[in-house]
Length: 146
Image (cartoon, rainbow, N blue to C red; front, side, top):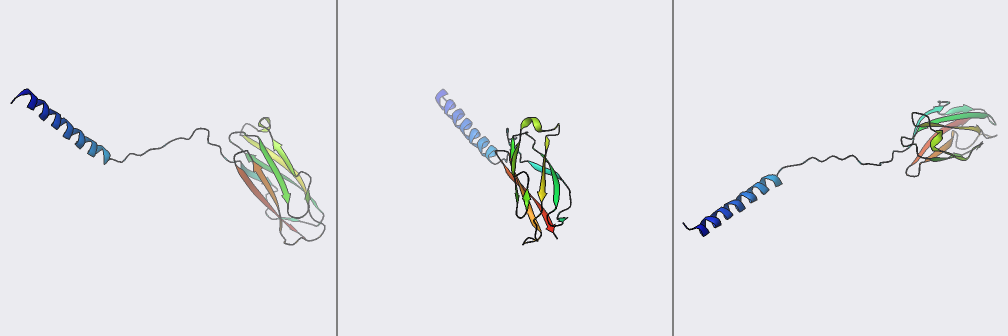
């Protein structure tokens, strides 16, 4: 056999072996997992004081509320307080990075004045909306006025 034929046979053998190897590799499944950097978590309301929901209130009665929420990234958070009936002393505000505690939590405190007459529907609600610039989160507090 001449050298030229040997090179052709070796080349064909390598080519067939590489196709076989490619076919074997292509049939394998590969699991991929990834950690996304800079993912932004939503603010989470951890506790509400008073914790009863619905809260029972007389007509024209003041009630203090405190919400404790956590934002893992300690993003500046704006919030709005929207009562369906009655009124609140703080309708909006913001939490800056320096107002978070060591557990990445912060407090929002407000006073609610229940309506002077029984609202319809009853119970009525107070909606608190948190916005960290990336996520919008709402918490609804129910109030039964009598």
